[in-house]
Length: 392
Ligand code: CMC
Figure 1 (cartoon, rainbow, N blue to C red):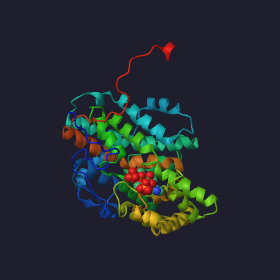
Figure 2 (cartoon, protein in one colour):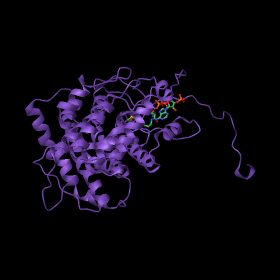
Figure 3 (cartoon, protein in one colour):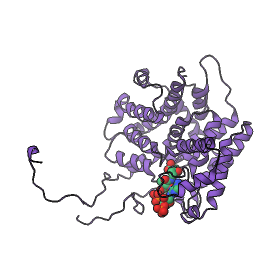
Figure 4 (cartoon, rainbow, N blue to C red):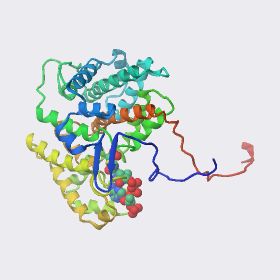
């Protein structure tokens, strides 16, 4: 029709009805399938939360064991994928590698291209994707070190296996500390879904053209890469490092963030929906203190982060605009404490967000949603006649 409502950035436009994640930005509430994020982060595991998001209910012991069993049977990645992977320069950005590798999985799984897949067939793709993602993320990390990749071990649960492939060695079993497994579970759970954010909307819109699961998720990974979205976790640490190198003068950097003529933004601050606080940031801040304490790490960057937060929360600029620390503000400090290099942070966000993307893609398909196709208001030139190149 001729009538178009304009909402640039979709600030007030709902694109779907969803039963996956509830978010109240005014009250700072986040729930997956009705369960508060605080309870899931402290009592559940990432793989159980993945099941909950994708299938809608908490699993029974049998269902959870079966889910974990099936995933562990699919963690191996086709050896020919290695040839493709080997072609990346060793210093290429992990997110560029990840989105390409996940896209390539479609080529290695031609069944996924079949239209009208049965429920069981779709389920198998879901299992394969969750399984192979953890292997691929660990490959990317190993490559950055110039180390050989480590093969998965079925005896481990999902998170332990991921840590084994990431920090393990070929010749010996490296002890994965329970405190590290717990921290990783918490972080992945906190990132697992966040309703119709930029990358999730991308996954749904790409999937709405009936594109396969791998292509849809690869597109979501690309959307997540940007520093205004998932890339913020890398940007936060880089910012904190810069402030540290600059002598730790937080007031100066707060002034920069407020200066409208300065493009600098306080990374890890502000959120499109949360206008009170980000409940994930609250949990992460505490987890950050705990893990650094347990690992006996004293990170000056954490002190700078805390001072920045304290100063910002009292500053009228931040108060009036309701800018609070978001999930990305403290997560990088934990990833760092666990031993991950900065440019791996956004890949870890993607690993956590994967079940959410899958659940949203599956819901979009089950709801038989039409192809996503926003309209526009045309503001360009109207009638013009073509002019020969010699006469322009
Ligand atoms: N530092 C300084 N000023 C800010 C910031 C910030 N981090 N965030 C927002 N503002 C200001 C902005 O300049 C604007 O001011 P004014 O009204 O005077 O023009 C006002 O606050 C509203 O901001 P907006 O850009 O219109 O808000 P938005 O909803 O379009 O953007 C955001 C939300 C998250 C992109 C933005 O707050 C931002 O760029 N934050 C920094 C990047 C970041 O931490 N991103 C992670 C988001 S959470 C997890 C995720 O999605 O991955």
